[in-house]
Length: 519
Image 1: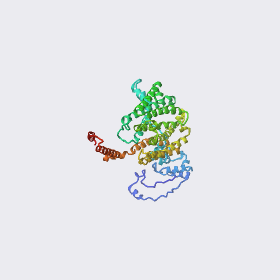
Image 2: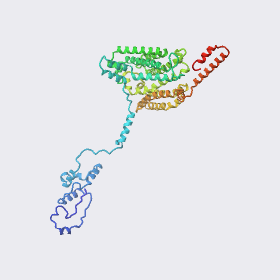
Image 3: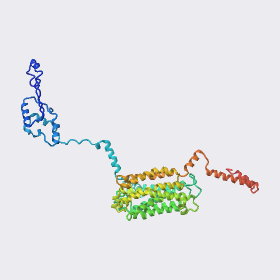
Image 4: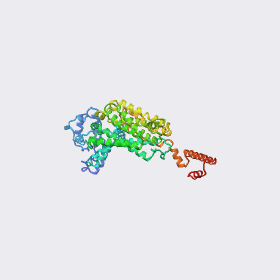
């Protein structure tokens, strides 16, 4: 302990009242007293304290370095000199210093780490969100079932949401949009005007029958799917809120709805479009409800059957557009031949798209599929599940180039679709490397959600010959077909004139031909 004696002076508080001015001036500069500053032993400390017993009491913070010295001694485990002095032997000054120390027993706060900084916390939160498992968006069927449960029983307010929930509205809308996109991409001579055949292409009436019939067929297939597996739907969080599981509609009522929707859809397609499209709609119902649904509990090949089901709607739209210019109208003319390769390419696009989409979606709920007894690659063979998603992601490049090669779209579509395909492929490679972990399943799922509409929109924007026709319509340049038709009419007029000169045409017929409009 360092002992510092105060200088002997008359300025002490107990001597100012008894010293006169002359004595005060004579003692203004007292002789200095040597002070030895060293760490003393216990006996020296006692002697120093005993000698200073009658001196002025010092303030509590006089020994300012004692707290630091004590911490240093305790940290090195050498023992503090003052700690060896019993409390009974401490002087009042030392006791007061001990009392003035903080009484809090809480541990000192740890030094601030760089991880505690605000921007570090934000970065960590973003990384955690990126690497988190996929959280599926709310199920529309479950939401509709919840709203129906809040409605009065046996009311139209309950019946409509229940029927919509049986139809799986999001899936049905996707099916209809893919059929309409394929219908609009069919390369017909008349881009905007309807043809003179019985089923005109791009006719609002034909499009109405196509969308109505496809919607009813999709609703029927989805309702049959729910009818087959209500007890297994109750085991999964995504499906336990469906109307049949909650008892919002009877099994008989759901079966009647599925049958009527299937009959209505195929009938609308048969009479409003053509028999080939009607057959494809019925085939889609049979494959989805009769093959895919029961196969889910038997083999992992159910995913491939489901992909074929998703590829049929583009063929339906293509066959609906091809029917307007067909000579016979049978299925061979509408689906086979080089002129119909574009329809098969669009069907292949939908088949390939479903694998990266479903493989990433199923991985996030693999445990639920396993507990429910569904045979899915996501839990049967996770490595193969990732390989399949990557393998089919590679097919988008040749499919898009094929659409350009067979004159469905312009060659610029191959360039415009490349960034979208590259982005999906990048996420598929990451999904394959990590096998769904560290947010790779989440990234591939949302990449697939954006991929399909982007590719379809780009294909319709880059449709073969569309911008040339739009340019001629805006600028006013005549169409080549119109020029050929005018040349053909001029040749007919010349033949009519020559025939009239030779006497083959009567004057009355000649005058009537000249009076016709457009001559």
